[in-house]
Image 1 (cartoon, one colour):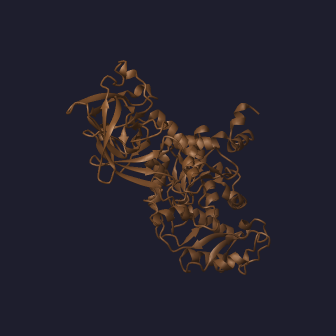
Image 2 (cartoon, rainbow, N blue to C red):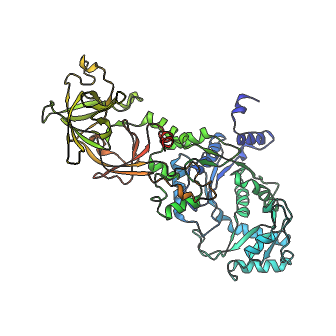
Image 3 (cartoon, rainbow, N blue to C red):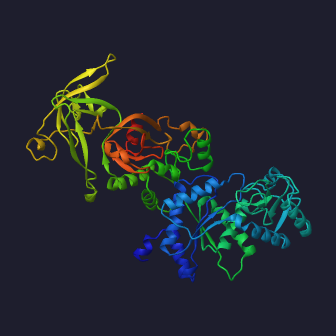
Length: 562
């Protein structure tokens, strides 16, 4: 096997083998088939990157098909959100299609199946059908309606279609094998009665096809060459092929279903149903809450399309279900933003610092590098004055030798500015420090070339000029759950593991004035603090920033201390 072959994932190997065995390369066609019943999450991103990535690799079309067979849960809002997320990730589909486009064709094929003895109308309740199906170790028993005449089945199915029966009273079942070791082959339901308005077909249909009947036939109609599904559909493959056998024309391409492991991410849940619970019960602020694993949530938090694509590529395509560490996703956004995000200064927990020997009323503009990782990023000017804000945690009255920030009697460098020494503090009645009084060395200005400017001190801290600082709201987001696998505990509800500290709101942070003209979605590194982006809530009058990720992965250390 060549080196190129070795580097292929197992799905690419399958495609290459099919091409080697005569599949016309021009017949390659893929699809991404979400159900529009929720927002896409990072698990869907893996499938998006896989299918659209294969399309790019083989120069083959990729359809976006909405498997919209359940009018109870599907909405146009989700259709629009899914389109938006795919385009944001950087992919473009060949056609936008809907399984509902094929409702008439599916119905017509079902009628043919009844005529050929492959389907029948069953009057049993869902509970009766479930009981009659048997167990994995015990064969099922035939429905008392299994051997109805073709004419009676056709008449009943037409009445189901016309809405003459109530929901739950009749279903159409495929006639396969009630003793099959694969429970899905024991006369599965093809149609059920649902008198609900559909987001596209409105009140036209009173019966709706089940997923297993719809999915493979939709692939066939669209002439999809490789139908790539997650592992939970592996046992469905036999039924997928059986349904195809009922309609297959040898003159046409026959789709091939193959399965890969779904992407599970630590410290979150990936079930749409559970994500919907979080939204509806108010544990998060909507589908795009930056703590959610949804693509829209990650986008709002400051993740980029490239970081998600790179994460998907690194995590790879597996044959077995596994959990990918959230730290890998965080690694990729750090790696990208380290190269691209402008550096700025912000103070989240301010304490006033007064440079007592700096002339009152004096201001100067200091030069600061925008991004040391990008030579073309250039420089900006930052105003400096007598009174500054620094982080409260950057000062201690008394500290040991390992504390390299500001303490009484010791020196630090102010980033891009001067060396200062702390001399005294002012406290309020509660004993809280309200001001730190310092002196500075006027010859120590960064970049001035003087001997004093080259003097080495162990600590450097960031700051903002009080007179010029902009007030900002900062939202510090952390992992939504404290447990690595919150939905894996059979004896506990996954919501018991919600992290009470997943959002810390800071109303009175201060940022340098260069951020006055930012736009929603802009990314920055707040020096020494982490990577942040501008939230859509931000306005000219009220800046709002979300923490995308800390500069380093501190979660493991925090957990070890607990």
